[in-house]
Amino acid sequence: MKIPTRLYLSEDEISISWYNIRSYMKDKPEPMLHPGTLQPITVADLSLIFCDESIKQELDDTSPLITIPKDLQTFYRAYRPAPLIRAYFLEKELGTPAEIYYKFEGTNTSGSHKLNSAAAQAFYAKAQGLNSLTTETGAGQWGSAMAMACAYYKLSLTVYMVRSSSEQKPYRKTLIETYGANLVPSPSSTTEAGRKILIEAPNTSGSLGCAISEAVEAAVRTESCRYVLGSVMNHVLLHQSIIGMEVKAAFDKYNVKPDIIIGCAGGGSNLGGLIAPFMGDKIRRKNDIRFVAVEPASCPSFTRGRFAYDFGDTAKTTPLIKMYTLGSDFIPSPNHAGGLRYHGMNPTLSKLYHDGYLEARAEIQSDVFDAAVRFAKVEGILPAPESSHAIKVAIDEALECKRTGDKKVILFGLTGTGYFDMSAYAAHNAKTMSDYVPTDADLAKGFASLPNIPQNR
Image (cartoon, rainbow, N blue to C red; front, top):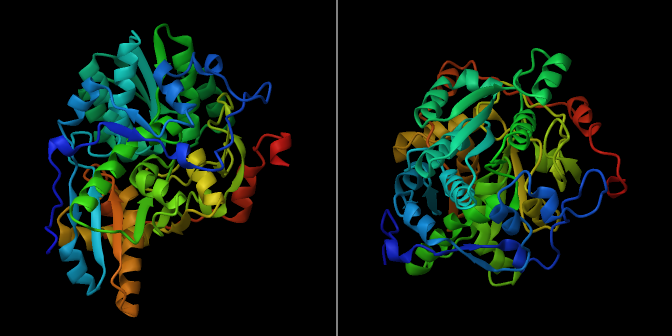
């Protein structure tokens, strides 16, 4: 049968469970370590930072499916199922025999997939009786989503936004404040961590590592408050698995079998969520799908990073995480336009990559925006810079099919819209966008900050 442009699911077909990849992995990700004792982290160690249910999910390596609370299922129905679209116009533009599909997560008010986990973490905070939350944000998508979720669940929120992004995207600040949250450009003088960073590097453009340090410090010192985050951690990836569950249900419904699944990768949550049920099947040898993570060449955690225990923040206050990392002191170029600027990668995805289940590519910024514009002209959606990394590789794979004559099925994640990124598109249109790629010497500075522990030797 002819596949429709939109592969519809009804509300009744939305998954009522999240998919836990770790339960299917033969070799589990290494446990987080307490930075003082170097022993596996415990619930008590994390209880002052994260919400109780988030901790439980973070440490759960055995439950295949975790039921989504009823109230949260109701919230999801406001914008889910998200569209799964056959890119007929892009296929025609490329002249490829490949079938191209994309899962579009930009239809909610926050403009991205981030709301899937923001709503979950806000729900759990409210259920725990907390009054406020703190978080960080890179490009502003997570901050926007968290502000929206906190407004819904009536929680106060402080967002520490990477300074360079807050300057590039002032309307993200407006959106976040419209929902009632407080936005602080990071590093700031409001925290000890921020003040220390500013003394050492007064002109710094900031990083997610800096912003995390500030948000964690603020959460710990504030009564009835916890820290929430939008990527990297396993419980965030778990919440994003609603994306992959919907895709798999739609593909099964329309008898579509993907050959290649592509996602952008910064901290890894959207990629992990997109591939979750398909990766679980691959681990059990039920498919032979290629999974491709696409990261910016300016922040190449997978392709040039080290698989080592590292801190999740610049101030070195978080637990140690075994991941692909550039070092917690690594500061990405401020000229990078998207939010994929975190120094490390989710530990589950890092383990899958290390064990050969996942490929990775790094793309330079101008090529990514060329692909974004090409996509926008035919599909009618202006993609977020982050998503455009996946679009770039999807186009490359489709053109390779054109060369070989292979009719492969390609899926990529369109994580959100780019309408708050007009300054980046303006720079691309004016041909003033730069393509800075860190040198080996630049990376060496970040690697020098890796903790000196036996597991890293």
